[in-house]
Amino acid sequence: MMLKNNLKFVILGFAVILTLISIYLALIYTPSHETMGDVQRIFYFHVASAWVSYLAFGVTFFAGLLYLKSKDFKWDTIAFSSVEIGIIFCTLGIITGSLWAKPVWGVFWRWEDFKLFITLVLWFIFIAYLALRANAKSRTSKANLSAVFGIIGFVCIPFSFGANRIWQQYHPTILASSEGSLQASMAFALVFAVFAFTILYIYLLLAKVDIEKMKEIIDKIKQQVGG
Amino acid sequence: MKAVKAIFLKELMVEFRNKQMINSYLILSLMILASFRFAFSFIDFSISQLASPILWISFFFAGMFSLSPTYKREIEQGTREALLFAPISVSTIYFGKFLANLLVILCLELFIMLLFFVFFPLNIPDFLALLTVVAIGTIGIAALGNIISAISSNLAQSEVMLPVLLIPVLLFTIIISSISATSELFAGGNLLDVMQEVRFILAFDVVFIAVGYLLIDYILED
Image (cartoon, rainbow over all chains, first blue to last red):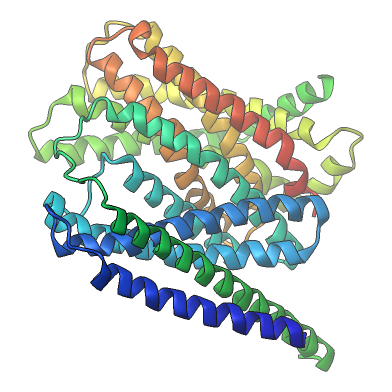
């Protein structure tokens, strides 16, 4: 337990330092974009948040599969914790993306763009996942049903992706994308931000899993006391 | 196979014995279409462009309400345990219920289409193609709706949870592809023009049926 706590502190310290460096890289180190200007700097955090949300939902999918196979509540806790973090980063990704889109495309949101579309669908699916868990009647049914729904939701993603590609043909994109090519320093800052956010995600996941475990212990104690 | 047939017939019997239920589905379909018609009566709109989203959203909502009691009534009437004790596999129950749902929703959709062409008069060059798209789209709705209905029947507030869970997984996969295909047909296309969507919807159907077959055990076991 002691060792595990130490490890967690190391990861936390690592995440904080990496995030600070990545802020420095994004705001000061990289030159401003030739066509988009300083607005483009939000891109590093935007891509990193979106990546973490996809990673988190992917973790939920695999943890759900492992739960159904092993029936070990440990996996269910991981799946649920990962969804909560994923939702936060997904929301951040959508907000930063909209902030970026407004000056560049002139609109906050483009319904035709498949990346935006997929992210929004993921967000909807996992909001529904949280609603499902809130309405479950027992611990087992909560774990079973949410694992099944998490798997269904994740399986749907490549399909909504494809469906959207077909759908797009009838709604050609009107606004031309003005993304220029990335300079080497920009690419470095991007990779660094993604790495920093991934470490941050790992820390948040560990912390959230611990909180969930404590909640379960408290529930057990409450039951023993006769609450 | 015999067990699937037995479950299928049992479901249909329950469904059609209760005439009020069928009647309320039909009235609901009428109400949905009427509300679309009146909502759009204030604006100048081109029927052929709006028709296919209206048609599929009506299908979706009418179908959803008919899916909701599938597993819930087993719990309410205490027949769930008996069904699970029966010497048949759980996936048999799924297939039986899926086929029954499919038939009920298809009947409902035919009724909706009848009303639809009264409210929104349209020319369709290739009616057979439209029926094909509707039929394969419905397979997906019934397959996925069945699993989600099984999930939501075990939850508190199951009536609300069914649409909450069903919309994000169904709307962006089957419904969007079907709307796209149907728009093309309303614009004068034929079945060959929408082959891409048709193939896609068929892939959905296969995947959703497979997912239901593999996962229904875990939903019903607890």
